Length: 419
Ligand SMILES: Cc1cc2nc3c(=O)[nH]c(=O)nc-3n(C[C@H](O)[C@H](O)[C@H](O)COP(=O)(O)OP(=O)(O)OC[C@H]3O[C@@H](n4cnc5c(N)ncnc54)[C@H](O)[C@@H]3O)c2cc1C
Image (cartoon, rainbow, N blue to C red; front, side, top):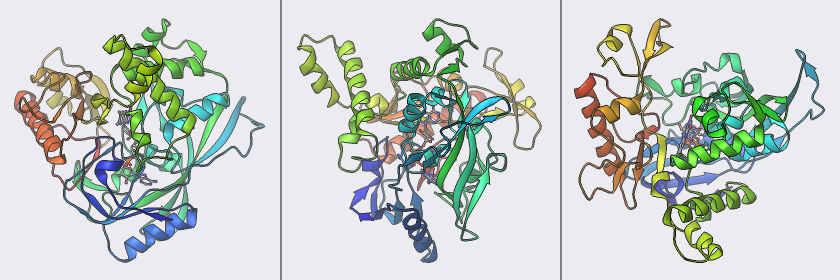
């Protein structure tokens, strides 16, 4: 187990956050459990971190323990793929510390279908089930079979079946255990859930083709929603669409000491080359191409220094939705009490409240909305958590004034009140 000095700014994608009193990287299953159990027994604040891509942490020192699971193995116990319900299903287990996109790349290489649409989402396998990651018509919930956890309350390991995970839109019973109300931390389990994920077992179809499940993706591929294509083609298209919106992490972060070794080296190289090519195309420089690739790989892409989508799409009561302008997006959704509600678009509300891409609170602010994506709050270099929080509050207040809707942050916000 390694203990190094670090800060949240070094290990989160948005690159802000205070010094960490104790940072541990256990390399065994028992090491993870013991580290969690030790912090809990001592009553210390505990943060189990993955890729730090869904966290905004305050600038003040974190006087507790931060644990990053260094186990990244993927195992396929039954590669022979027995037939289940007329289909060949492959069960595949990944340890919690495994980089999520490494996992997706592995499944696509193996000819498995089910998570290709989730290509390029930063973070780890462990955290993927905490907020039930989703994109381009897929959600991780639909491929999860079981989740192996350490239960911090009852102090034992458990296998939770997918059906008992309480999966919903950006939600699971793990995430629910951290809050008493939206954006209101629970006293017992925050900023890390009651159940610490140790590994996840997925059930994937043995198929080299997948379904294109989302309009924007279908358009990029020149096909119809519902068409079947090679999973590798779908993966490549997802990565391209994401890159164009700045919704990938900055591949340069894996060259830093605090992040080195947390992602497959070949995948880091692929991501760095793609990012360099994108930057070169944008800069249209006359430097020879080999040299340009190297230079660009070292240039930070500030649109990618974010937590992804910062606000959840609000799910409103029918009455509240009726007060929105007629052209506001509306989709059927279920409210927490199980009744029918309406999901609208946080990006639409933000944009129509006057906060457009690239918005900053002041002309020289170091935090701003991404110039490519309204929903991403970015660190343009040298921002503090307080700068990001000031931007978030300005957007929340402005949207509330315009539409009567208070936006709820999607990331885990530690040490800052963004209710
Ligand atoms: C550029 C960008 C694009 C994004 N796009 C998407 C997207 O399309 N769809 C989407 O759903 N999300 C998206 N996200 C959000 C983020 O990538 C996901 O939420 C991801 O699953 C977070 O993983 P992580 O390992 O970085 O979690 P972290 O940020 O490290 O942690 C998040 C939470 O999970 C908890 N956690 C971490 N590991 C464990 C564990 N082993 N056991 C229990 N709890 C744990 C932490 O304690 C914390 O509460 C995006 C983020 C970025 C920066």
